[in-house]
Length: 194
Image (cartoon, rainbow, N blue to C red; front, side, top):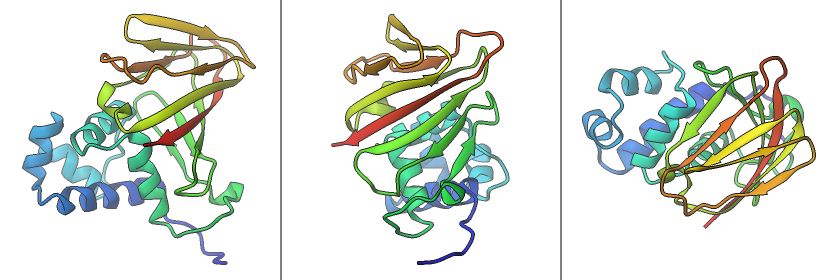
C-alpha cells in the first residue's frame, strides 16, 4: 500500500472537471453555457488557481449530469484505489465562500459513500435538484449542533442524534443551514448512487 501524500483535493477536482468536460467533447465555453459558470472561472478551477464554492460545484456537476458527490468521489478516486481510508489521507475540501468543510470518510468508490461535514455558524449551502438526480438515496445524521435541511418549500430542523432520509424528487433542490449563530454543526451524510 502506498504511503505517499495524496494530492490536495482542489488539484484533483480541477483535473477531474477537465477530464469530465473533455470526455464529453466539450470546450470550456460549452461547459460554461451548460452550467451558467463563466469560462474564466472554469479555466481557473481546472488550473487550480481557484477553489470552487459548493454552489458552483452544484452547477458544474449538474451540467455534467453528475451529482456533486459523484464528481468529488471521482476526483478522490484519482488519488488511487484503497479499501482503507486512513484519517490523514481522507480528502478534506473547504468551500471558500462559506468555510463549509467536507471530508470524504469512505474509500473512493465505496458504497454507500460517507461524507463528514462541518457547517460554520449561520452558514447555508444550497444545491440544485440536478445535484441529486443520480442518487438512489441520501441520509444526513447530525453528530453535533443543529442542522436545518431545506427540501424545496419544506424545512426540517435536526438536533444531535437526529437523522433525515432525503426526498430526492424535490424539483427545487436542497439546502443545508446551520441555524446557530455561535456553534458549528457537524453531520454525516450517507449517499447511494443509482
